Each structure stands twice: as structure tokens, then as C-alpha cells.
Amino acid sequence: MKVTLSERIKQLRTLHGMNQVDFAARIGVTKQCVSNWENDNVLPSIEMLVKLADFFRVSTDYLLGRENTRTLNVGNLTEEQCAHLRLLIQDLEKTNPTVIVYSKDRGPQDRS
Image 1: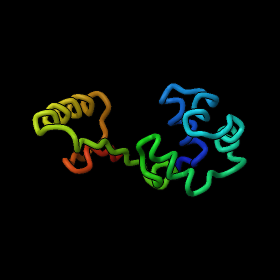
Image 2: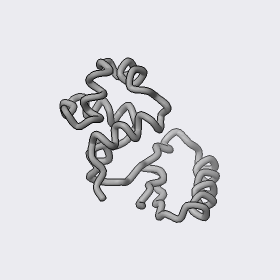
Image 3: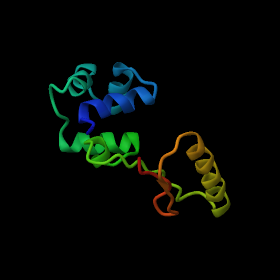
């Protein structure tokens, strides 16, 4: 089932441990604005959609529910750190089987 933008915003906000007031303050809008997005009353502007994607470090397609791929930027990690990360991902896959594709440029990508 496709996730809606309103669901995705709320999901990401709560995963980051923020209430609507704190989240609104962090991105420079009102609590009412966040509430309207999450209740599917109003859509964020294109500029705000990009700001939200940057804030949560996800793609706009992920926010819009067009894809479920989550990426992790490993550009600043060493090859050794990336190797440790690959091992961690393998351990996580054993407890939560999903397909994760790893790329040095794009990082691990959840393909579930």
C-alpha cells in the first residue's frame, strides 16, 4: 500500500522524537502548518517539500510515497568503516529480512 505524504511526514517526525511544536520550530513554520500537512488538509509547497526532504535526509520521492528506498550517505566514511557497516547490515537482515543494496556512493538502500 502506498504511503501518503501526510503519513510520511508524521512517521518521520515521530521517528525523530519530535512533537508538532518542536518540529515546526526546527523547520520554521507554525504548529498549525504541520498539523495541516499531517491531516492532509494542505500540501507543503515545492520549496518546503525539498526542505523537508533535506531535514529528514530522504528523497522527495520517499516523502511523496513514490518509493520506499531509504539511503544512508557514507561518503565521509573510510573503507574500513563501510566494511563494518556492511557487517552490521548483514546482522540486521538476519533479524529483519529485507533486501538492502549497498553502494559506496549511495550507501545501504532498503529495498523492502
